[in-house]
Amino acid sequence: MEYVILLISLVGIVFGADYLVAGAVSIAKKYKVSDFVIGAAIVGVGTSMPELVVSFIGALQGNADVAIGNVVGSNIFNVLAILGLTAVFFPIAIDRNNMKFEIPFCIFVSVLLTVLALNFFNGTAATIGRIDGIVLLCMFALYMWYSFYRDRKKSANAPVMKQEEAAEKVKTPLWLAIFKVTGGLAVLITSCDFFIDNAVLIAKSFGVNDAFISLTLIACGTSLPELAASLAAAFKKNTQLALGNIVGSNIFNITWILGLSSQVMPLTSAGITSVDYIVMIIAAVVPLLLGFSISRNNGKAALVAGGKINRLAGLVMFAGFVGYTWYLLSTQMA
Image: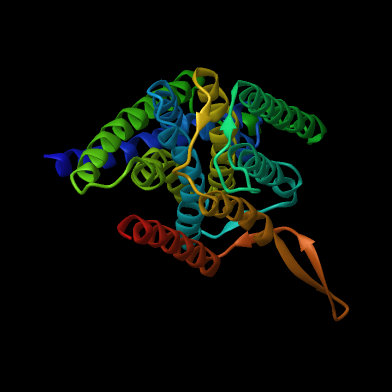
């Protein structure tokens, strides 16, 4: 029965993501918000709601392995698996604007979490306390404010669109777009909840521990909305929304989710190792590295901002996720 529910949940996730992306794109066009920002600030936050619920409940129950492991595992899955898999079907362009703020900020908060959560001097787990959580929440507020501020500034400097052109570009009524966003998000979260519950039941029957479950099954399960939303955006030829969804989700996971969870109870997790945090940081750096390309001018090669995640890079990223999962499985069985 658990396997049937898993299949039905996956169908719900796919349909929910399609409606969420369609509604978000319509709203973005109507208010002249860039696809990347709508992906990072709206779709990214919305698709991270399952992570918020799981981590918050984990903190309430005193299970920091679930709260922290869910975030670390989700961030790794988002970049290596979701971006990698999406790029296999549709190469993802990374422009200069992405590399100026959002991607570096994602790397910064990933390093910040590692510093707060792990003591590298003796290898023991530190505690993410309430003060640490407030710092993370301030980082989230800064990210949201600057994202919209920069986008409004960019829109103000852009050429004014004629009314008939704007009307032609936005065909979906605002109420319908909002309904698609809220309805799609509700279906996503509900379907994801059923998926996680049944996946954990299946995993428990095999006798694996909470840290492994949170880093793999729960992390991948709560990231299914990001996967569905990114693929749906890519199929609509909107890879900037797909990239923004992943980057925004990762920032939201660290700053907002762990910031809130640590206010419920200080988070101390010995089950999440330094390897997990390092892989998370490497995953955050990958889009920045791939964002550079080689430009040739008069026979001279120069490194310039503005590259893309092509199909080969996507395959390598996905292979990296498979390798990391194999490592977790091997340590679990040892």
